[in-house]
Amino acid sequence: MAQEKRKLVFLGVGQVARALADQVQRIADSACAYQLFGTTRSAEHAESIRAAGIEPLIIPAFSAGAERLHAALKNAYVVVSFPPDSSSDSTASSLAEAAAARIVYISSTSVYGKAEGVIDENTSEDFKSPHAASRLQAEESWWSVGATIIRAPGIYGRGNGLHHRLLNGQYRLPGDGSNYVSRVHVDDLSNMILKALESRPQESIYVAGDEQPTTHREIVEWLVERLSLPFPESVPLENCHYTQQGNRKIKAQKIVSDLKIKLKYPTYKEGYSEELLKLQR
Image (cartoon, rainbow, N blue to C red; front, side):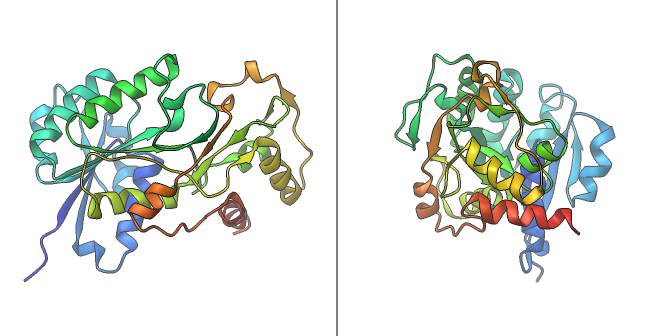
């Protein structure tokens, strides 16, 4: 008897969803284990979603497409990665509560706002930060319906990352480059999500990241040397995007321990070495 396929529904099909879709399709026998669906607001994205092995669900607004979305979420594993939106989060989380088997919400370490130093699951969120507020509101919508929350730092890999900005001449060093930044390769993040879906009870909050937070300067020096590029100019820290102003070292030992994960790219050196190899292919 053929194994019944479990539904895996992506609410939002971006970098993370595509990496996870690729992962489950590469696992032995996974083609028999999962049927993949992903929401999009526009039909123009449907073909690229289908090309990734994901059946597109064209739903311009969750409120107007509630019946269809509820049917899609029934008994499904659900991964939420669309940007915070109070209306969409409220509607979708309510529908998922009544239908989904398990939910993982992909959040951001931006919820820690101006907090500096070592950050882990015991660090207090910065409720005063305007940049954290919308994300925390979205988290609450999903937490209240039993979702596992994974707070990710800067995500890179599969064609996305700092090396492209350096090559394009678009990167400027934040301040003197001495602030610390954490990151996670999208393949490692997708593995964390899959492990959370398959092996963990809901209602957990994790921070994600690799094993080696670095200063902006360290990683830029490493990359420009390998790319044979001049060191970029700097820009005053206060003029940088808020995501570049942080000074945090994400300590992600809990998710690695709880979910029994071995990082494929434990530091930026392994991750970006792989990305640089792709440029030569």
